[in-house]
Image (tube, rainbow over all chains, first blue to last red; front, side, top):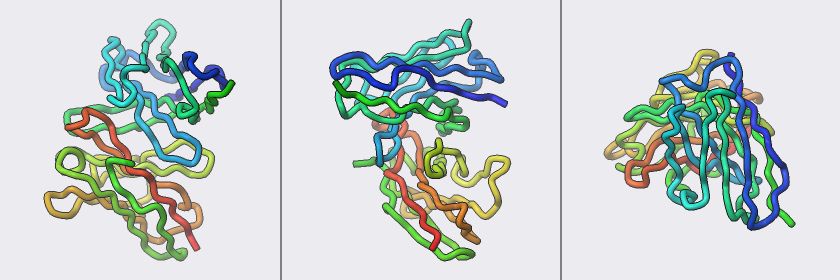
Length: 122
Length: 113
């Protein structure tokens, strides 16, 4: 059974860089079928796609966040990571990593991590 | 402001049927598959419908999905025989070709009275 687990600091200062890692267990991140994604949810609000990455390193980002977001994949550790630079209070959210099935007509997040709360505050 | 529009809340008595709408456009719902996610309080979302109307294994057939409207720009999640355990937030999601982004609806809170 594939499982995902987010890890990283729960508190980040304004203007600094938020860094999170998602560890994949029970399966390989090098699957040719799936992408790996980050989604966030501000307190009391809806879901927002941040970006997705393939095991090869090819990535796509939400245009609204593209200038501040970078994702990485480490196949040797079966992990992928997220960095969001120049954070503000608006970046405070629960951050989820997820497995993404992405075809020409479909995007489906079929397995999710439990989520990790990140607060931006001085 | 979400690209996909959902009602903020719906309610139903136990055993009744409820539907949740998701309104989009030709750049998203009309030309791409829609998925629906259930988020129980304090938990991560879980897919309950994919490819407009398919259920993952383990999801009861009380859950259904469809597309409708002019140009099929709307999607609907249906739940029959509503149970208290179905109380959750429900989100629709799909790809938006114009934005080149995954888009979600704002979410609908289901209350079972």
